[in-house]
Each structure stands twice: as structure tokens, then as C-alpha cells.
Image 1 (spheres, rainbow, N blue to C red):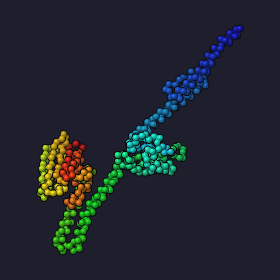
Image 2 (cartoon, rainbow, N blue to C red):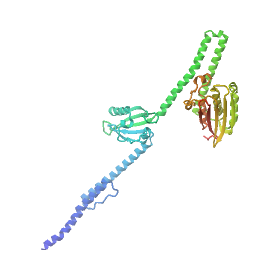
Image 3 (cartoon, rainbow, N blue to C red):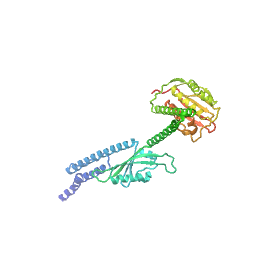
Image 4 (cartoon, rainbow, N blue to C red):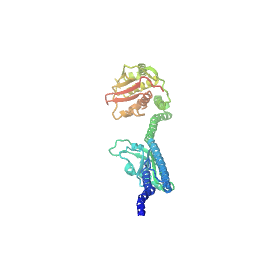
Length: 426
């Protein structure tokens, strides 16, 4: 009877000891593992003094610490990668073997004006360039870097300009692997480089053409003189006058080319000081007086603004070119040129308006380009180099100003110059 009573009293105590020694520590271990798996900041404590539980708890604590360090490292690396890719002006992609894009930076979105995220889409689907897909396939197959140039023309319905890209493709090799896990593509926008190369080619072609014509004429008349025309005085005089005329044209062409080169490369520093627009215009009119009289032209000055800070010699060249241009393209005598100036805030607006033949609409966007002529044959016969208005543009821009043209064909043209009243220092 007593034994039964003792057993009945000991049962709860045994259950409590079992709970405290084994069940509760196991439940604590379960909660600790869950907390580690969920990356919770505060892990539960395993309440046990038994060695197996304390060892397991310590091991799990070290696992949790290592996991937190690895996650911080990955987060730091991810932040660094995002920062690097985000600060790059080059477009970057990473492509897997099926040619699906796994990574793309913001610059790539901007370059190609992507309207949909490129991630997990194929290269063909995003870029529509089979040559790019073929180059990526070669980089995978040959396990080497590939460089291609991509011409990205606008598709139907798009208004963006043509773009040119140099694409560097490099295979990404895993540690200990023999086949690439992906290909890194870096896109460099070289559109401006190609445009400058085209301008250079066009410039060389234009210069060659401009020199070829007078040189051919000079060479022809020299041959004429050598073949006996020296004994024919009228013919000899005509030949020599022609040679002199085209020699002067060549010299003028060289001087204009050097002037543009110095201005564009800022080798000719502006000697700025306060000067009178009226005085400069009066000097220009005096220089062109024979041509003005020949054309029976009139030049009217209506100047409300006069004194501005500028390089007088350079601005005189601008005014000379604009007035000479108006006289050169006059189709009949009686040309009228009106020059006005007025103050607009911190700027002075100077307008050369004439009643000449005007400029066709298709030519107006190009009149300030080097060697561009509206009336090609007549302007060349008149001795023009095709560089006058280009010099005007470069000089005005060197002063921090701007120049534009407005014309109605058959109703004259107006060239508008805007110059700052005071030049900025430096």
C-alpha cells in the first residue's frame, strides 16, 4: 500500500524531470533551428545543462554566425556590383548558355531605349541582332573574347537615330570548370566617333575638290603658256590673270582653313575689350565699298545697341563675311542690306537682313557647314571658299554667342547674331 502511494507520487516528478532534461531542450533546439533558418535576429536559448544539448547549441550558434557573415558579405558584394554597374556609362549584360540575359545594367536600358525588362529574355528577343547572338555563341564555343561592331538602326515606327556600338564579349569561367557558365557583354557607344570619322572623310574630300579645281586651271594655263602662248601677248596676259585669280583663291582658301582650325582648337585666344559695333560695321562697309558700288547696293545701319565686350578683329571678320555673303548672292543690282542691333537683357542681337533671292528651305539647316554652297557654281565663280559662314559660326560661338538664319525663298534672308554684352572670365 505504501509502495503504491510512493509510486503514484513519483510519477509526476519523473515526468517533470523528463520534460526538463530532454523534451524542453529538444523543443528549444527546434526553435533555434527555425530561427537560424529564418535569419531571425534574436535566436532562442537552449535551456539545458546536459553536454549533448550545450554542444549542439554552441555548434548551431557558430553556424548562425557564419551564415550572418556570409549574408553580409553577399549583400556587400551585391551592393558593390550594383554600384559599379550603375555608375558605368557602358551597357553591360551577362548571358547564360541558352542566351538568356541574367543581368543588365541601367546604361543598357538607356542605350537601347528598352521598354521591357530584359532579364530572362533571349538576346534575339531583346536586341533583334542575329550577328550579336552569333558572336555570343562563338564566345561560348571557342572560349575566347570576341569584339564586334553593332549598327543599331531604328525599326519601323521608331524615330531614334542610328547608333553604333563596339561590343566586347568575354566568356565567364567557373572555378575549376572547363566550359563557360556565361558570357559578359560590354557595349560602348561609338556613334560620335563614327560621325566624326564621316565628317573627317567628307572634309578631306571637300578640301581635295576645292584645291583640285584651281590647281587644274592653273596647270592648264601654264601648259598653254609653255606651248607657245607666251608669244601671243593677249593670250599670255589672259593666262597670267587667270593664274593670278586662282592663286589668290587658293591663298584665301588656306587662310580660311587656318582660321577655322585655330578657332576650333582654341589656339587663337580672343583679345576681348569693349568696342563699338557701329565703328566695326563702318570699317567693313569701307572695305567692301567697291563691291557695294558695283552692285549699286545700299547698306543701312539702325543700331540701338553699340558697345559690347568682344574681340573687334574677329567680329569684324564676322560682319565682313555676312555682308560679303549678301552681296555675293545678289542676283541683280539694287541689293538692300539693313543691319540692326538691339539690347536684349544681357545680350545684344545683331541682324543682317537683305532683299536678295533668299535661301531654299532644304539648304537653310546646312548653310553654316564647311564648304556648303547654296548656289554652287555661281559662288565658286565669285571667288567664295564655302567657309565664310562656317567662320561666322565658330567666331560667334567662341564669344559665347549663337547665330541663326531665317529666309523665305525669293524674299531675302536674315542672319541673326546674339552676343553677350560682357564676356565671362576664364
